[in-house]
Length: 204
Length: 204
DNA sequence: GCTATCATGTTTACACTGCTAACATTAAAT
DNA sequence: ATTTAATGTTAGCAGTGTAAACATGATAGC
Image (tube, rainbow over all chains, first blue to last red; front, side, top):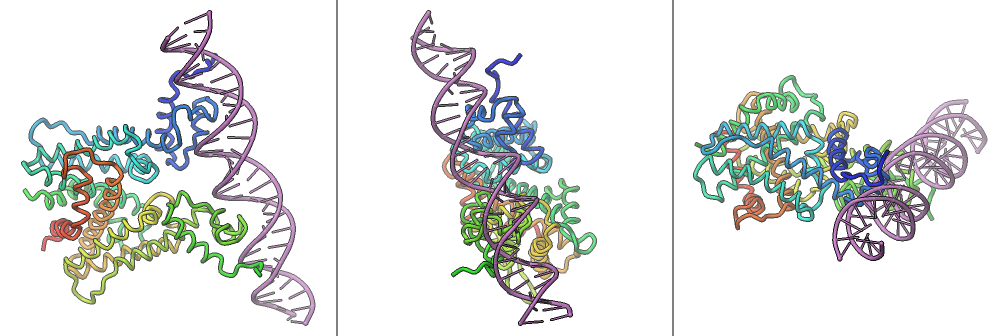
């Protein structure tokens, strides 16, 4: 016996959307299919999400929360380069294993984060965590810390993008020299690679 | 007086698609609107593009050709770090100025490049150009060249993504220390930044 | 030159989408 | 108990990608 009111529709829609987005990519997600999945009428979701972008924002918010958790490391006081390498590896692993969600978080599906306070909050919090880690690495000025932070972020972000793309482009170059083989070398030796570029970045 | 046959529809559709994709983003592009813009029936484009993805692939192909041109530098024999910094700057400039096209090239709109020979060709050619530049920098092994190449590519690719995203996220941190201000410092001193990370990469 | 063929264009149609407006039900507030 | 607001449903619009059947006209072989 189903009651007229669902009771917890919003959360169920978000959960379902997260699942479907990750499984099929956010472009395949429709509000109608989502509604059907939750056993509710086509337009019921509109009581909880103004537009489709609002729903995307919720999925992206969940994504940033998960990314924060994935990149969190237990280190009270001092942090070493090794810790930062670990953060970078975890970041990249998250990006590759949750590629479709990652697209939603860093693509253009959600235009302006400022319109979605929770999303802004969760995204900034991810950054703030990384910033904190750098601040525990050395006694740099805030500016230098921020600079290192953005630099590392852009490096791991770039690696996620290139590693994914390269797997899809194809490799008709010589054995072991083409982008795919090289990328896979990097991917399977992520620690070494990050250690190398981080050494250049933090010179200590 | 219009003739039944358009004469040059395919190229006109591609040109128009490139323009609209860059102006509004590829998600806003519809085959129907494209047809209307070219004064042709709704389904005429299907004589030239099997699916919408095929059209996307054509736009992306044009994008890679333009990217190759943007990243091409005149240097016959020896190439210096300065040249590579220039390549990196040009790459990033292209990514930021043609952001919507860039999304099409590196996003998931075109699933498998291998299905579109011209796209594969143009994308690989972009990589090959960068590889060639590195090969003129130092007498490294092919493996090392490919490694440096992928590393630089992922760095500049990551910067394009982060610089764009950060402008959209908002900055509620202390003055001059938040991601936006820091990113804009990097963006306005791209040469310095690339020089710094490249120095770490090529250690010469 | 005549005709068959084929590339290219049109018309029609289907299933799907985001979204709005009007209405129904029920929980919460007065 | 009555009002109100939150949450659900139904019906419908305009737009989408794409397939099928048909129309037109350029081109190749006789």
